[in-house]
Image (cartoon, rainbow over all chains, first blue to last red; front, side, top):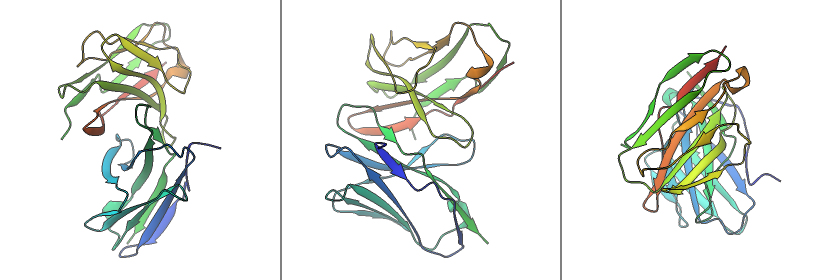
Amino acid sequence: RKEVEQDPGPFNVPEGATVAFNCTYSNSASQSFFWYRQDCRKEPKLLMSVYSSGNEDGRFTAQLNRASQYISLLIRDSKLSDSATYLCVVTSGNTPLVFGKGTRLSVIA
Amino acid sequence: EADIYQTPRYLVIGTGKKITLECSQTMGHDKMYWYQQDPGMELHLIHYSYGVNSTEKGDLSSESTVSRIRTEHFPLTLESARPSHTSQYLCASSDIRSPLHFGNGTRLTVT
């Protein structure tokens, strides 16, 4: 089983839709969790960290479920500019970050 | 915004040549990483360093080597480039206070 698993998509949604991605991780000792966004042929960029209590940044909400070992990202009121690949990232203290394969999102007009 | 720089941005080179991809960061981050990514595919960690004179191989076997003589500098070298090395190489850095920040990558083509 891979350390971090994501549904690769693609998720094709209309503008204004709400879309949610899940990411599961296998290492119960994982301590830090992030969502990154990667545009085509660009480097990944940090979208948001994921905190135990859940956190929100504008239209984006991230949640962590330690018991079931998954994190989620919810995007409300999708914009065309949200089209990208969303990468789930997990780290266990002093080990290198582990990236999921990413979930592709296409927001359609 | 993170200050991490990679050069060259694009490189086209013939088989058998020695190449060095440069990566520098001005944030004083202890940890630095090299990832390899083919178009539309996942990131693969090929090397990382947790400080000066410390380097480790990542998950993906690579014929490249790295060095960390200075905190800010983490070059990657291919002694003899081959077409199979054609890919995008992404450098990143982090520390305990800061999650991973990437450079804008080097797109390598070996002909």
